[in-house]
Image (tube, rainbow, N blue to C red; front, side, top):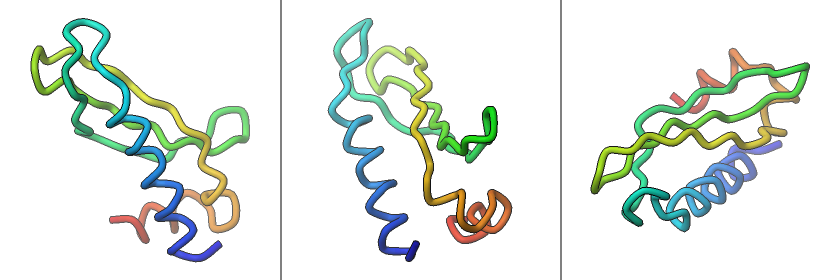
Amino acid sequence: MTIRDIMKYIESEYSVINDTPCEICGGDYIAKDSDIVVINGIPYDICDCICSECGHEKTFQFCAPFAEDTGTTSIKNMLN
């Protein structure tokens, strides 16, 4: 998988985050932290977000197929 393919996945994740209103006040979420983790052998991109209006925190979990090919250590290094 190329860097371009990886970026398409990440862009789609942020589209979901941007299109999801806060369940408390309807405000917009802002990503504050993101990490690749492996759960039951499946890689996920975990994105911790906070509402820009009320401060409510929400965690988004996305499947990360781009991490399968290269391993989580090298993918973290590529994205940082």
